[in-house]
Length: 112
Length: 115
Image (tube, rainbow over all chains, first blue to last red; front, top):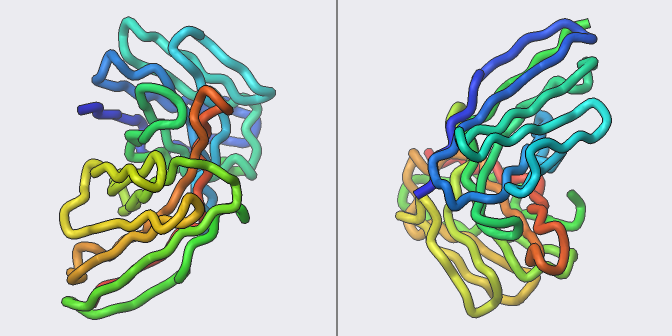
C-alpha cells in the first residue's frame, strides 16, 4: 500500500521567512496530493492540492511542487506570518475523492 | 467545518465498554471517512464508505466497526474499548472527483479517552 513520509516534523522560522515542507510517497499509482493545515482544536482544512498532470501550483503565498519521477512533493510558504503557525499534513491518493494516506505532520512555528 | 458535525466532542470511557461516535454531514456528499489521529503519527484511515451500501476497511480497522445509516450519517463503533484506542477521531466527507474537486472536508473531531 501507499506510504507517505513527511519532513521535517518541526519547523521554526522568523516572520517573513520562507518555509518548506517535503513529502515522499511510495505508490506510483498515486495522482492526487493535497496539503492540509490543522489549527489547535480544529479539524484539518485543505489549503492547496495538486494533481499528477501538473508540476507546480501556486495560491498567493502558498505553492506546491510535484516531481512524479522522484515521487516527492513539497509545500512552500513565503512571507510567513504568525497565523501560519499550525500543523501541516501532506497526503496522497489515487485520485481526488478517494481515501487519503497522510504523512505524520509538520508543526510550523512562526515567531514575530 | 460546520457542515460536518461529530458527536460527542469529548468522551471518557472505561476499558471493555462499547462506544459509538457519530458523524453527520449536510454537504450532500456520497463519500465519508473515519480517521484516527495520534501525536506524531498523523491521521490514519479506519474505514471509508463511498455510498450507503459500500463499506471498506482502511489501514487500521481492527477493533472498530462502522455503520452507514444514510447518505448523511456514518457512525464508528468500538465494541470493547481498550486504552490504546485513546485518540482524536475525525470524520470527513468528499464528493466524487468527477463532480467536484474531490476535496475532503473534516469535522471538528471527537477526543476519546479509554481508561
